[in-house]
Length: 367
Ligand SMILES: *[C@@H]1O[C@H](CO)[C@@H](O)[C@H](O)[C@H]1NC(C)=O
Ligand SMILES: *[C@@H]1O[C@H](CO)[C@@H](O)[C@H](O)[C@H]1NC(C)=O
Ligand SMILES: *[C@@H]1O[C@H](CO)[C@@H](O)[C@H](O)[C@H]1NC(C)=O
Ligand SMILES: *[C@@H]1O[C@H](CO)[C@@H](O)[C@H](O)[C@H]1NC(C)=O
Ligand SMILES: *[C@@H]1O[C@H](CO)[C@@H](O)[C@H](O)[C@H]1NC(C)=O
Ligand SMILES: *[C@@H]1O[C@H](CO)[C@@H](O)[C@H](O)[C@H]1NC(C)=O
Ligand SMILES: *[C@@H]1O[C@H](CO)[C@@H](O)[C@H](O)[C@H]1NC(C)=O
Ligand SMILES: *[C@@H]1O[C@H](CO)[C@@H](O)[C@H](O)[C@H]1NC(C)=O
Ligand SMILES: *[C@@H]1O[C@H](CO)[C@@H](O)[C@H](O)[C@H]1NC(C)=O
Image 1 (cartoon, rainbow, N blue to C red):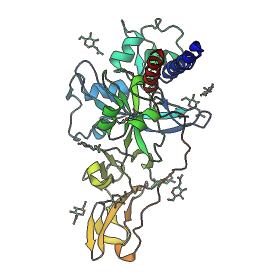
Image 2 (cartoon, rainbow, N blue to C red):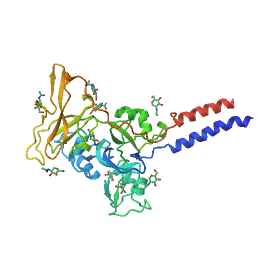
Image 3 (cartoon, rainbow, N blue to C red):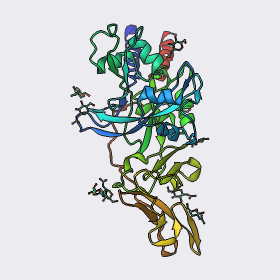
Image 4 (cartoon, helix red, strand yellow):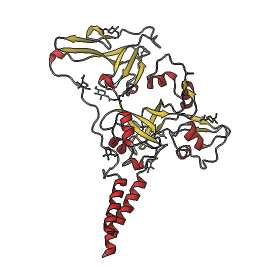
């Protein structure tokens, strides 16, 4: 009879232990569904180098199409020179193209590193690319049979983790955050304006015990809502998180996202030289000729504003908020929302917590 008393606690210990092993962070981000067709989007990675570097070097390293994309993602002025110094351990947000394939997100074909004398896959992963990817993942995705055997001149694709999934029924921008030793889900959540439960579910872990340092954690950054139409040429690039901006519509429009502006994308004429158009079309609101994109007018019933709605190869589109005098607020219907949650999270207890409970139970049984 006495031995039976111990069987259950011991079994629970074993289960807790196995559960905590299986739930460790992997550094891979869930994206789409296994078997579903590929989807693409823009994603962000948080890069920091142990050595001082420059924005131009980071651009080259990650094969970002232009310096401006990096400046936009970091809310830096357009006048910032590529040669400007980036301090050791300073975190820079780098935009990357993302492909969801068979349930996992990876950067689309970039960056590619050409192996130099003295390189090892492990140094490429943890030093050069700041721990955003593991060397095992690089060798797996490049089908390198022996990670110790890479040759000078060999081109190696760095499969950075990313995702395009909605989170909690909302469009977000996914950000790969390299976990620093000693941090917690709650601290990371506070830093990026999310909560620890969302972070845990998204990353398939149950608590701080499974949070591994020096691996990337998938952090969903809330994006500003916008009036940009889904058929606009920039529809896929106007999902912006707090503290970033984007120059769009052939250089004619500048949009920015600030949490302080009620998480609403704010756009106006950029006053820059257009790229493909001879001049920028007027950003006057269709239906209210005295209003320009970004203007708000007050009417006797309340404010009315003119927002950027996208562009085509001929013109810039605008949208006028509903006339406040004509009743119903006219809020836009939320997009999506019917997506089933991915993964199966049966327990809300963290294994480390149940492990402690079991230990206490054991102690009590022993008495
Ligand atoms: C989906 O993406 C994977 C990996 O990037 C690629 O190998 C595959 O060809 C893609 N499939 C389609 C249908 O584009
Ligand atoms: C897709 O993922 C599933 C498991 O998630 C795996 O069994 C399958 O082999 C994968 N298919 C491809 C083509 O990679
Ligand atoms: C950082 O600098 C050291 C010394 O100059 C050099 O050996 C090392 O390769 C550099 N690391 C990276 C990632 O550039
Ligand atoms: C989130 O934080 C709360 C309060 O700090 C805590 O009770 C809960 O266990 C945490 N959840 C996870 C998944 O870490
Ligand atoms: C684009 O939006 C319109 C209405 O705003 C909707 O009817 C249409 O299905 C959307 N298309 C796509 C591809 O999402
Ligand atoms: C938004 O970003 C600003 C700095 O760009 C920061 O001070 C603020 O805390 C952020 N707000 C949220 C809710 O993330
Ligand atoms: C903030 O935006 C939401 C919709 O996104 C709207 O319902 C709410 O009225 C706005 N609040 C203010 C103060 O403008
Ligand atoms: C309306 O927008 C134009 C162009 O962005 C700007 O020059 C002007 O000052 C704005 N007017 C008001 C009243 O905000
Ligand atoms: C605009 O794009 C459409 C389709 O993409 C094309 O048929 C048309 O010729 C383009 N117009 C101009 C002026 O470039």
